[in-house]
Length: 338
Image (cartoon, rainbow, N blue to C red; front, side, top):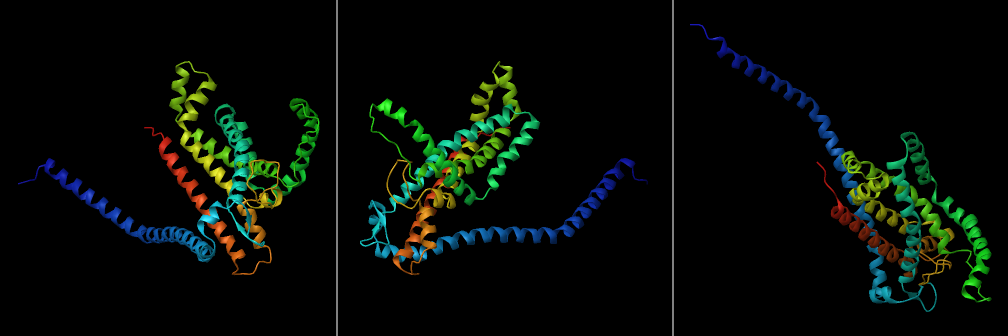
């Protein structure tokens, strides 16, 4: 008795499927050694990153703990002067923290709005040709060494500010009706350092914000245009709110970069730790102090040398807190699109 053709079809199909499964199994077995090797390479890179972080924490704690055995944490955080190498010594780190945030706030005041506006132009207004030309030009600023920015602040920005204030002195005297008023700016000052740091962080802000704006779905823009919105309304009321998580993350990353900047503040901001909000005065930041002591003749193991690690630990904690704030803001303002 012959087997019906319809009964043979499933057998042939089953044989074909079994054959294809065997082929896939052979291919996967051939790829498995390479995939396994790549897995271990990726895992090793991740482990190096984690161990490096723990290594940095260990180095900071190794010399910070002996320092805090000699200087109480309360004194370290509440004393208003910082002079650990003088007699009597003062260990008020808030003088360095104030200088650090004065420079970072001044830089943010310049770079954040300018970077966001530049990103809006590149994403929403610029033609593809203009965007392809201007974006690499912006990003070229990120490749300039920070020591160049430091000398630029010291030799160009500061003299320009001194000349500007000198010319505006009669105007200030007229406004205040005080003929004896004279506004001066120190050779080393926070304002010049802030402007230089702002120029340095500008490409970071503009690039990250432009990327965040560029990935907003096109359907949102088209829907707003269909409702009669103008290009400005679409940009400011639709695209920017939709990309707010990425914009906030770029802002915090830029401020974190400004807080950790070293060479610009070491060259242009000065070495006078003080608690002040006047950007025309000489100040000292945490990174500037670390450079000063590291390049000096402070004996290794002394309490003056240990202050480097105590200040570095404070800077590390501030950076971690800012990164955690960035993650929280991204989660809060994140928009999910289908």
